[in-house]
Each structure stands twice: as C-alpha cells, then as structure tokens.
Length: 342
Ligand SMILES: NC(=O)c1ccc[n+]([C@@H]2O[C@H](COP(=O)([O-])OP(=O)(O)OC[C@H]3O[C@@H](n4cnc5c(N)ncnc54)[C@H](O)[C@@H]3O)[C@@H](O)[C@H]2O)c1
Image (cartoon, rainbow, N blue to C red; front, side):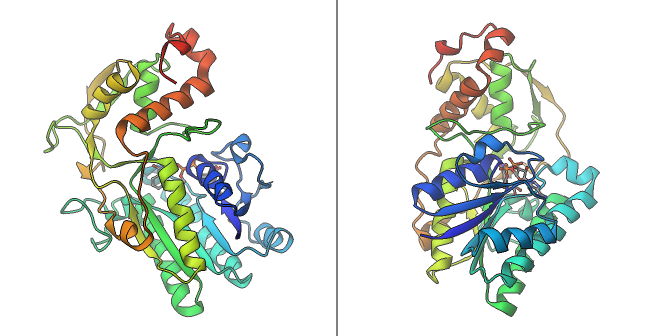
C-alpha cells in the first residue's frame, strides 16, 4: 500500500484515478485549487484547496500529510485554444508550477512521479499510429508545456534519481460505470460531451469543425480511451515505479481511431439519440488524425483497456449526463431521462 499526493484530484481524470487507487488499496491526499474541479469528486480523500504553484503551501502539505511515496500530477490548464491566446498562463501554471512541485517532492524524498501528459506533444505527426519515439513537435503552448515538464522529469531522474512516468493520453472520455463522477469542464471543448449535450437539447447543436480533411469521411480521427482504463493505467505506472519496474514516456490509447462522424452515428446506435450538427470551418491547430501506438505500455505493464469500445464510452458518458443534469434534461429538450438506457 502506498501513500500518495494527487494534484488535480478534483478534476475529471484525477477523480477517476482516485477511485482506482482506492480500489487498489492505496491512500491519497488531494491538492486542488478547484479552479476547474469539484470538491464532491474527491469523495473521501482529504482535499487541500491550494495552488500547486504556491511553494510554501506545498511544503506544508508535504510536512503535515506526508511522507508520500509518490505524486500523481494531474493539475494543469488544459485548453489548446486558451494556451494560444494566453501562453504565459500555461508556462506559469503548467511549467513553473510543476517545477516547484517536482522540487518540493524531491526534497521530501518522493520516490515516484506520474505526470499527465498528452498526445499534443507530437503536434502534426507524419504517421499513424504514433509511437513514443515520434519526434516531439508541439504546435501550441499547451503541448509545449507538457513536453517541457516531461523533459524536466527526465533531467531530475538523471541528477537525483526520482523515478517518473509521463502518460500521454489521447482522448479521455466516458465516466466511471458506478456513477458519482464524470466529465465536467467549463467551458466544455470535448466532442463526446458536446455531442451528447446537443442530442439531449442541452445545447442548440454540435459544430463539426472541418469536413474536408484527408480522412475516410473528411472529419478528424481521434483515439478515444475510457477514463476508467486511464485511471487503472495510473495504478500500474505508479506501482511499477515503486517496485523499480519500467517507467518513462508511454502513450495511452487503443490503437484505433474514430472519426467525428462515426462518433455522431454511434451516439444514435448506443443511446438512441440524434445529434443535431452543423458543418463548420476547420479549427486552427487540429491535426487530421491522432491514433496511439500504445503497445509499449501494454507490453511493459500489462495494461489491457477493457472499456474503451465506443459503445461503453458513450453509454457511461450518457449515464453521467443523466445523473448530473437530470432536471435540466427534462426541461431543456423535453427528454424523459428514464426513457434512455442507463
Ligand atoms: N481530458 C483529456 O482528454 C486529456 C488529454 C490529455 C491530457 N490531459 C491532461 O490530464 C490532466 C487532467 O485533465 P482533466 O481533463 O481531468 O482536467 P480537469 O480540468 O478536469 O482537472 C484538472 C484539475 O486540476 C486543478 N488545477 C488546475 N490548476 C491547478 C493549480 N495551479 N493548483 C491546483 N489545482 C489546479 C483543477 O481545479 C482541476 O480540478 C491535465 O494535466 C491535462 O492536461 C487531459
């Protein structure tokens, strides 16, 4: 059993990781400033409402709630568009704050560090599926900020021996089948919640950004991975570091992609709703296709994503919307909540 510090544990992926850690009998303390998270997502773990860039607050947290065996670092700004508009916020909150966290963790004898990284470190890759060895060539400050923290961790391991893994998620989606937590971002920018909300009448329509890509149906292709599969990957990565097993950079995806149009069609099949959508111009910076070669993580750590088929993803994402926004659903679209699959 390990004792962990989880930054960003009140957010979407961090709260799912907390559940997986608890199921694996680890204990955790959460640091989250609730700038984009929800206290109720933390469930029964202690929540310290602090900014991870605040060195004194971090040091106090380590002194009073540690010693921690490892840190799982989810807290970050994570909007590509915002990072282009306000790059310094990303270099401050993602890069500088992570440097502070890594330094405090190291000084307090933390043995392992797991970073939430992203497919955005690859930019526009030349081939698919993308292996970890593909060149890092981020095209926006968000992707650049994550690549910098990865580099920082590699340098710190070399100099001081603190072990690390950076998990490069492709598209996180879905919700824990047990309920109580799910995708909640303000503003929401991810396709699946946006499409489900449009289908349920919670927003007027879905904008389909770009229909002229050189893909099988002209729309972008992404690799969707269920958040509970991602959460379990964190437990594997953490335990491997603490047992002197493999670490480093890993892609987390399924190895196959779905186009935006395929996701829209699958919503009809999986949850019986029709997505109203409108074709719109391409969004700047969207690569046509991002599909992971995740064979390294599967081989090194035996990870087998078991919920990342589109049907399970959509049904759990829809259950979460039903659970969390039931009243709005009935007034917004005249949708009878119970009329659909839970
Ligand atoms: N959602 C995805 O598809 C996806 C894909 C790739 C990578 N990621 C990465 O995964 C991580 C988690 O993503 P998410 O979708 O759960 O995001 P999220 O916004 O739901 O969670 C991030 C959490 O961190 C907290 N936070 C942010 N800055 C903080 C700070 N300075 N101090 C303390 N707390 C702070 C927020 O309040 C929030 O609860 C992020 O690092 C993100 O870059 C997400």
